[in-house]
Image 1 (cartoon, rainbow, N blue to C red):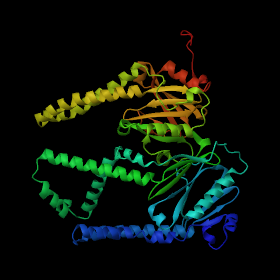
Image 2 (image 1 turned 90 degrees about the vertical axis):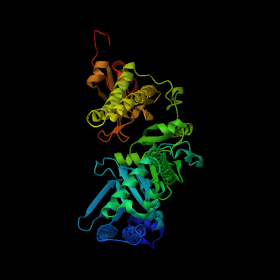
Image 3 (image 1 turned 180 degrees about the vertical axis):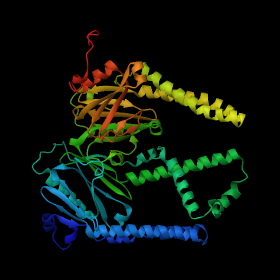
Image 4 (image 1 turned 60 degrees about the vertical axis):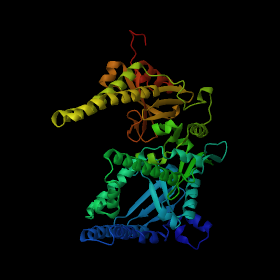
Length: 535
């Protein structure tokens, strides 16, 4: 492939051997440009002044970049790959040589990505995920530095050889499921991470300047701002700072939306594969086999929920480890909720019964007992009391004004958190809808997940002492997909690589009945019947 420049394409495909593109050398040589650009920026900010600490810091950074450049060049010199009818082989390493082999029939997905520097030189990264990989290998096998044409050809050849002699799922058509609508950009500012990114960026800049022995308060632009606004009242300055941070947060969120979702399209391709393509500077292409699609998840965070927006994620195998799954599971950007429901209906297999018509709506789901509401209200009040106790305790020791602040914060926080607890309780729901198990939960972010019942491989039942006292349990449906566990209202943790989607705070009888209705007979050997109760 890339190593056979003059050979015709048919000959290259027949040989099924290759190496990384020679353009990768240019990419590696551009790595030291970063510290040089940082040095020039520092000179511009400080008005041409510098010191020994600055030179030492930048010199260390330049040395680190040169080391990375050397490692990358060695990788380009030593990396070779080979594709046969039975396996894909990758050899690399100069001093520590490595040879990795993946059987063709174990390959789960072949995806393409390209960062901005690679796009300048016409390169892309090909990633291969396979079954049976442990946690260290969960990130998959990567070929970083193929030309676009060779990467596309290699992916097609891998998929063709993997599918040889195997029947693939028939699909109704080969076409577009969803594509970017420019009006969706109105949802971009409604993400909470924008303000956080501004504060994190400011902290990183301050730390970098501090390491370079540069006092940010002595910079010309900072002095000018102090001279202009130093005499305004404190409340007015705080208001201006809050508005400025919020505006920067909105700008960052919008810019991130544009970069991540420009050119977005979700398409069903031959062989029953869903392919998501997106990205402005860094392009991404993620493939999800419908055979491995275990369900979908509708996410409605508070800012997005206010404008009837939502996001749609896939619950599927073959997306890598936990972190990779979080980055690759998105089926849509933030979009109107009705559009998300339409895409979910297109993505999931065709409905076989009337009750499957509105899988992701919470209407008709079984409510949870009132004991679940009491548990949430108790937690809300305890959090409010603990928060108010801090300024009250400090006020008894330092300043009585803090005691007053604590008495104000406590009741206000109790009212707000109680309202949030009630909303979290109203969101709880579960039910069996035809071939699917539906679960709803969440407070800050409402989450509704539907799982294919045949994809459930086990049940996980837990009961805390407080749950036992209230006659409740938590029922977890384990599927060989997803990035983790519902550890709370919309919070995830990891469970041995499988996704455990939990129905929290359900009564014992209803929880066991739900497990039996979803997957008949799976839980029966572990359930003891009570003769006195006749069940």
